[in-house]
Image 1 (tube, rainbow, N blue to C red):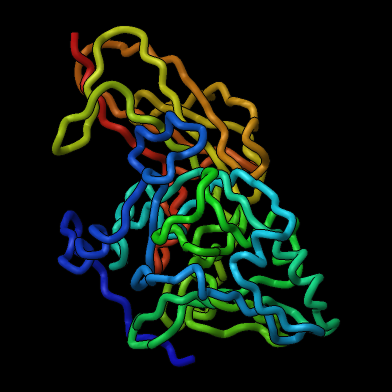
Image 2: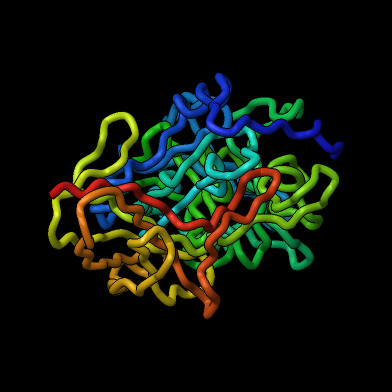
Length: 362
């Protein structure tokens, strides 16, 4: 595939009209929704690459073919008759935190809110692959969606692939339900892929076909997009598992315009969530003095399962009235928590701490 045109960056403190259009179509989870262990469906983050397709569930079918012994053509009723599994999954957009980078890559201008946790119910993908009979020399599984568009001059259907080993993980689902109800159109109805632990780009919505292939898939969303690179000429490293990340539920009440917080003098319990798609969470660190010092928060149990976030809490008593800057960060896999965003061309996988400005009233 030809290399798309050179990237363009936004000016500090200025959001372009194109970015505003994207931000109006997509939405993040309001950070106060961190109070919910499972995010209500309407508050879960959304990123739609192209248009939300209008799909007639009564005529929709899912094709499973390629390097298989038996091609499958499945209706929604066919899927609904198969054994189902449930899994609670924290899912984040790979571009979460992009708007905080400098220079800022032009795309959906996420701050911290591109995340949510939902309970998905669906058919394990591995069971369908076994039913079809995967060829011994196959290597990947390609997932095609019903949404189409143009990106960097490339006309395409949204498509992604997984290695055969990843696709066979028992928790990977062809999901039909979200939080106990049939999928809504914006969340991929009538059926979507859910890949626990991975950034959201892997969980292809509005599935139309699945094909098993013998050679690596080289579609745009695989070979160009969602790769960590510093220059357009770089091959890049493909994104997969979510980096460790912690968020704080903003304390007190907000200023309408700035979203800065206002709290009263006295004890204040800070709470939040932390997750990782790969390395095990070691803890959450909190700073209440503008990141001069960091202290461990109390980490809650993994009671939602291995693919969902965990709670944390930290008791803070402000030293004095006035302006304070709080921050939190995740620590995982035995390594120190990063303090700075790792800049890359797509603005992906930003591990920087969340910072919250607070005014303490006497």
